[in-house]
Image 1 (cartoon, rainbow, N blue to C red):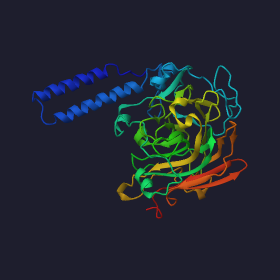
Image 2: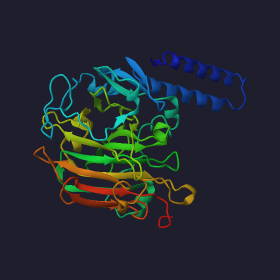
Image 3: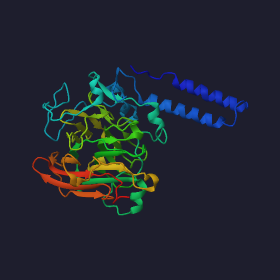
Amino acid sequence: MGSCGCGGGAHFSRSIVLVLVFCLLGLISITCAARLSVSRQKLEVQKHLNRLNKPAVKSIESPDGDIIDCVHMSHQPAFDHPYLKDHKIQMRPSYHPEGRVFDDSKVSTESKERKNPITQLWHVNDKCPEGTIPIRRTKEDDVLRASSVKRYGRKKHRAIPQPRSADPDLINESGHQHAIAYVEGDKYYGAKATINVWEPKIQQPNEFSLSQLWILGGSFGQDLNSIEAGWQVSPDLYGDNNTRLFTYWTSDAYQATGCYNLLCSGFIQINSEIAMGASISPVSGYRNSQYDISILVWKDPKEGHWWMQFGNDYVLGYWPSFLFSYLADSASMIEWGGEVVNSEPDGRHTSTQMGSGRFPEEGFGKASYFRNIQVVDSTNNLKAPKGIGTFTEKSNCYDVQTGNNGDWGRYFYYGGPGRNENCP
């Protein structure tokens, strides 16, 4: 069982007072201010950990070193939000775009047959009891790797692919590169995709590689609304190079609102089996077995919340509509694809891989793919997207190629190795 860290704050507070007293008495050298700063940071980190890590009914150790805390559903981080103090948890969506009907006992679907099933690593050791949700425990080192306690669990500003942007300064400023397919020009009420799962190599710890869908509302200015879900490899956020399921949301272009997974108040989880931010297993291999995950995000037309489903079996929970401005109504753009951070180590393009690290033309078993990409239209049905566009900042580094066939519907291959002879 995990400890709650009780009394930690008081201990650090006493430390700060003592250091300050000794400083004033001249009993400590010039390093005084530095020590005071470290003590303050430790106190701030400890307070943040106490906020994030809720008391657990049970704790499970994962083979990858994660601790998964089974937290009572009503104690999850979402309910720290002042607007959610009296919120009644919606245990099932009132509408499903695939026409699914959920019984009263459990939000799941009937089909249990899975081809190449994907699970999360922690499942091999135990599972969380009904009425609880699994939360990946945040450790001190996780927070210390962030640029500040305040920025922990948040994306940097301007991390959205902007297909219409031809401003090279804007592209270079963010350091983010993309290879995406997108649709715009209509009202969208959700999106779905089946995403090939890989474990791309990351060159620098402050870089990441992810594959996701974006549900966007508003302009690309300060008021952008975004809901995002997919898989990512992010050493900075998680402290390793594992491929992990993730979500993200923001209502102000990544400035003050939103976060990854459950690292702030927002997403309300109802599922006891899938942990946001936990490792996905197995992953695809080059010319080897291929694995993919299916993600569906849709707007409940009755309550207005945005729901997320993982695979065919797991309705995970929802983002309450009050979190958003534009998305409280509908999305104006849907994007699917890959994103990496290029920090230009040594003044050259990063060798951080996107997708499988191979270019799209290599095809199945080598390049990564999104298949059966769909949008939820105004009649609340899943449809093939019309007028798909593609976008990449530097196609010699990462590229995207779309296609269409009977089994895979609308699909695309995407990704690349980053630095190569044509991408110096």
